[in-house]
Image 1 (cartoon, one colour):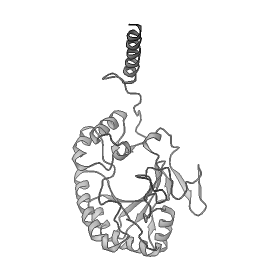
Image 2 (cartoon, rainbow, N blue to C red; image 1 turned 90 degrees about the vertical axis):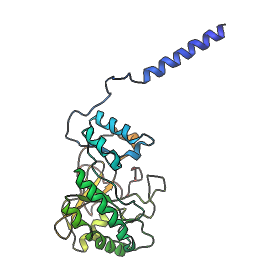
Image 3 (tube, helix red, strand yellow; image 1 turned 30 degrees about the horizontal axis):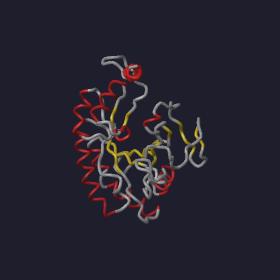
Image 4 (cartoon, rainbow, N blue to C red; image 1 turned 45 degrees about the horizontal axis):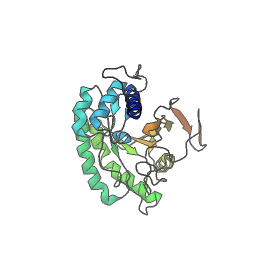
Length: 268
């Protein structure tokens, strides 16, 4: 009898503790953004296996501004919650503009994404270089420029920005590293493009979540180029001190040490 009573008390204590850890329905959130000076976006795969609709609800409740790279089937829910999709999907990262034989497939996918993104009122579409697969830097960059020229004018016409994704190629861990990815160093890429007459329209800046610049494309349009530096979802509480400009060639930033060429701790 004493054993049963002791077991019952223990079970009750555990149940009470667990209940205290779960906020009551309608209880106040632990945090909500109070100002709109930082427009933060989140990506669904960082929160797997959380379903996208649940993430959208949390993002809205927390005062975030965007859930990006989410399927078009979820766009109406974003709008219902006052959110945007800061950047939309297109072709995957395994194929891209580094290889001419992949240009047509990527361009076809991008045209569809650009049309849908423009119609929805979203600002940007992601694109990729694909894997190196033995390419030299010179050959790969030449192929990239030739391929992007075929689509950037259409994006400009639709008032959509193409963003070329830089990925971590040093770490062979799912969704942290992409070994053999071609565009893995933003400074090298910008230097090579400048040597071929491409105009860089803004300095390379550390935005906290990554380093960013933009390039002028023939016809007057611009394409965003960024290298992610954001932490995993478990470390999103870290604060950023705001944009930091790099003095290229020195490796120094105005307010902090420049991250390594590819940050192994980033999500990508």
